[in-house]
Amino acid sequence: MLSRNSEYQSFETTEAASSVTSSPADVEDTSLEATVGTPTRFHGCYHDSMEMYAPVPIVAEYLNSHASWFSRCAEPMKVEVLGENGYALVIGRFGAFGYEVEPKIGLELLPPEEGVYRIRTIPIPDYQSPGYDVDYRSALQLLENPANDAVSDLGKMTLVIWELDLKVYIHFPKFIHRLPKSLIQSTGDRLLNQIVRQVSRRLTRKVQEDFHQSLGIQFPANSKKKHSWHRGGSRE
Image (cartoon, rainbow, N blue to C red; front, side, top):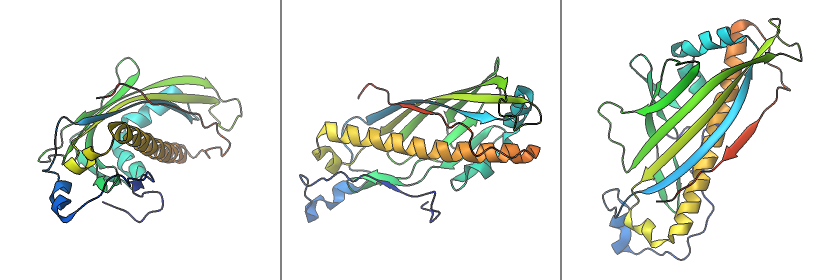
């Protein structure tokens, strides 16, 4: 899926790969079948927050009713419902050095346990990912604070704090492995950060707007936007 929506586009690195040349004999190496070795792992740890101008119970009720808003707020990503709490999402097409993937992942939005909402990857029925695997684990917590700017008639603001641990494993074709491993790793990590940043900011904004609209509250344009990104670590 490659939408023409301006908010949804492919991610392509600008890194040059002049040290790698191709010949007609190399063409078959670009196929997904022509992979070698163990998968390359890209790993990121992220945390951020969003403000919801309502008390915790109202925000919790909204989050629990994700069937009524998740698919709509996830646009322009394609979403398929998987059971009561699951969704299959096509994230978009992205790539580097002439190699592209279009991740499709299954996510389950688990019911809260002791006030913590967790999201994890689940299998998508009758679907085999072509050359990649994703391990998505996130947690959300709700923290209630006074609404100091008094934009809410309810007089309270809930801060939704989330953390994400994301691992992506890619079985690259042979021709990619001609590049230096450090270049592959740094480019992949940078693309992962770029994708998470863009998707999360877009999804955060849409959820905030949808939530406040459902309550008849105008979401303040000057609401704090906190974005703390950390790229985590080990390499494989």
